[in-house]
Image 1 (tube, rainbow, N blue to C red):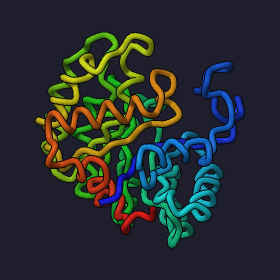
Image 2 (cartoon, helix red, strand yellow; image 1 turned 90 degrees about the vertical axis):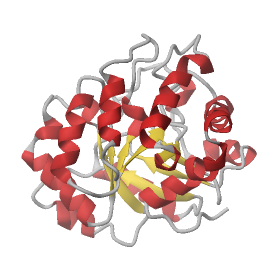
Image 3 (cartoon, rainbow, N blue to C red; image 1 turned 45 degrees about the vertical axis):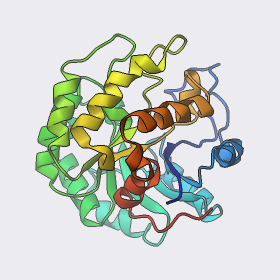
Image 4 (cartoon, rainbow, N blue to C red; image 1 turned 60 degrees about the horizontal axis):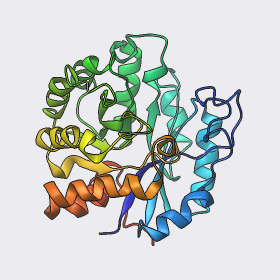
Length: 279
């Protein structure tokens, strides 16, 4: 089994297009595939999934063009308006490309009930019916809506990004822990071990701060429904790539060493319907 980083971002930075990036931060510049390729090679990571960072189909087309020229970009989780009546047509024009899923940035959605809207749920059902994955990106206030959302959209490739964003920096536990358990009861949902360092104290976090959250995710989802994602370059706000990778490698070695291939490749291949990665 080859190794996959299931969550990376690329962009040509513009303050107008990427308003969530603080001006002057380490993220406020172009971030291209070649900027991370050497890190992947040194870590023996064979490929990645590129995930949208802007809610615009222009970015989706751009990511797909990048992937078409780089075999190690194994798939793209793009963006499309899931509430649009023309969604099926929009998805059809991407058939035969590297598109493996769609993500809507619910965490920034002005409608606090977006996940429970009938049009959004219908769009996700259409997406799942096309054999594509839906990445769930929420903050703590929206996480309790996820179980009802999952029941409404039904079976399919559903991926919880960033473990539902627990408040690691504040030591928060409930209602995150109980909601994660409820989400994990839906067997078609898998969880990305991604974005955790940026939910911790950016300066002072330690592996021990994150360990109980990882252990809870393992207890709820089991090792075969967890996947590694670095969340590069957003992770660099709190840690460099080798440290993020080491956090999950050490966790797997401690808690579920027999499932290393699943966490570092197999789960991503299954969720995103990937063929054998290209080295």
